[in-house]
Amino acid sequence: MVKIHNFGAGPAKLPEEVYEIIKKELTNYENSGISLLETSHRSGTYLKLNTEIQAVVRRLLNVPDNYKILFLSGGGQGEFAAVPLNLISRTGTADYVVTGAWSAKAAKEAKKYGKVNVVTPHTERYEGIPDQSTWKLDPNASYVHICTNETIHGVPLVADMSSNFMSKKVDVSKFGVIYGGAQKNIGTSGVALVIVREDLLNHALPICPSILDWTVNVKADSILNTPPMFAVLQWIESKGGLEKMAELATKKSSLVYNIIEESNGFYYAPVAKNARSKMNIPFRIGSAKGDDALEKEFLKGAEALGLIQLKGHR
Image (tube, rainbow, N blue to C red):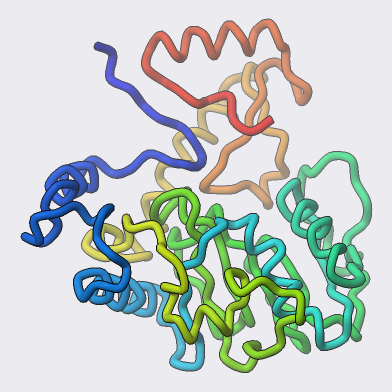
């Protein structure tokens, strides 16, 4: 059988060593005689794991003591609703920096719960991040939502880090809230990691469901309901932490971008160089819009060689 190389952005490929750990733990987690998947989230075994994983997050990101760490159902898209439900009540308005499809979805979801000000110029194609001098921020906004690591002072900065969580160090203290789906870098699909500053708790709208209410989930220590049970965070820490993850991300992405740049136009990267991701590398074949016939042939040949999930998001 051809060795499979999985290029899925998320759910993403697990490290080989994590495969082996899961195999051992699947039927007998820490000599309990049962799988972690069938372990009660109220049991001492799970409570210990819950505490350990929060501690790993706090160490990896140097999370200050005045921030709470939550593992919540619904993934990143669940937090598109949770953010306004928990934060927009202060003024009823929020600023959204729309730089791509996911931030556009987040802004659309937030409009259900208050007034949304899209601070960036409208565009049909997302090929870079508009210069900050073009942003039209509302001083009355309850928060500013971004999908990058820029810092804006004056109001809480909320960052969706689904794609690059745990791929490098970030200064958590510059953000009011950081959230992201776990399936790209840190765990299984369906769970979101949320890091929220304590002063932003206790502001949820009355209509906010308990499952999305950060304050309720802080009080329940992330086990208001049965959470997903697997994580990759211990492996990240054992391999040298976020400094090593950043080094590997740069090395791997550079290999791909170098091939694109040296292909004499056969491959085309539609994102400005100063905005290129080290996590997700969009590319077309033939031109910015791509040659459909050639791309289908490329994908067919790639799959025959064991290179799967290269087509990417639509």
